[in-house]
Amino acid sequence: MSVLRIKAWIMTAACAGLIGLAAGDAHAFCGKLFSKKDPCADPCANPCPSPCGPATPAPAPAPATQKVKVTEWVPTVVEETVTVLKPVTKTETYTAHKWECVPETVTCQVTVNKLVTENVTENRTVTERVPVQKTVTVNERVPVQKTITVNETRWKTVMVTEMKSKTVTHKVSVPYCKELPPSLSDRLHKICDPCYTPCPRTVSGCKTEKHCETVCEPVTVCKKVAECVPVTKTVCTYECRPVQKTICTYECVTKVVPTTVCKTKCVPTVETVTKTVNVRKCVAYQATRQVTVCEPVQEKVKVTKLVAKEVEKDVVVCNTGCDTGCSPARAGLLDRLKSGLGGLKGKFGKKHSDCGCAPVAQGAAAGCCH
Image (cartoon, rainbow, N blue to C red):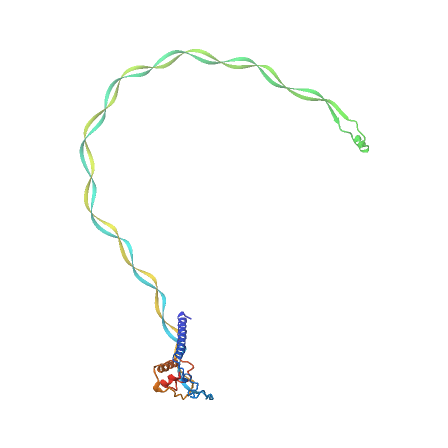
């Protein structure tokens, strides 16, 4: 069940309730507004009262009925075609823009520094080495013989007596005395007589032991002894003596000499250059995207509507011969309004009528019965 059907049913029920409520309120309000305090206000009362006072009530006649066509609004389920917007996903093509670097050929004036070579004569200071003879005093090493006295170390063998210690071992007899344990007979006797005390037994003798002693003895040994002896020697050595010599050397002389120099200098030159540069431009291109669009769709739904139907119903008719002040000649504005409201109530399909005066009375007489 769709939401549109539920909404249609709720609106139909609300309209039907409002129509019934308005019809009932109009009937009640008009009855109170246009009611009169006369015998004709109650169509079922005695319309012709006795001028002499209240009379005995007469037996009520049987009610007369008459068929009346009444219009009723009946809720009916009707199938209708409605237009509903449904979301549909579509692929659409659109024009997008992007930035691209586009190569372009540009001609422009460029200042270029070019290297130009030229010969220039310049005066330059030059240092030259010139040979020169000089007399100089030089220290030379001259060989010389000299007699010198030096101390020499000489070794000689000498007999020397020294005291040396040595260990001497010799044997010595030493007496000993050893106590023996009780014999077997003494132990047996001790078992039989606990108060028995055996005599102690000993063994004595001599044993040989080794004794070591340290003894100092004189020993004669040969030793080498160093002696310092003065010796006279003739040696050959060198002495430094000053000697006059003529030598050839070089001196640095400064001169100014004209020199041809090749120089390179930068000369600015204006040139026309054609170059390709990348220019950033906004370029349009075709792109696709997914778009959700609400499209109208025809759907069949069931709707509850109020349909007017004419129904014949039996209505009770009150035949009253009322002629007291209710003649058509006296019908005024209020009577015509009441008559109109009575017809309006019949249109809304009320199941009851006010004593059935509507089909009998015509014009102003009908307003008297209401």
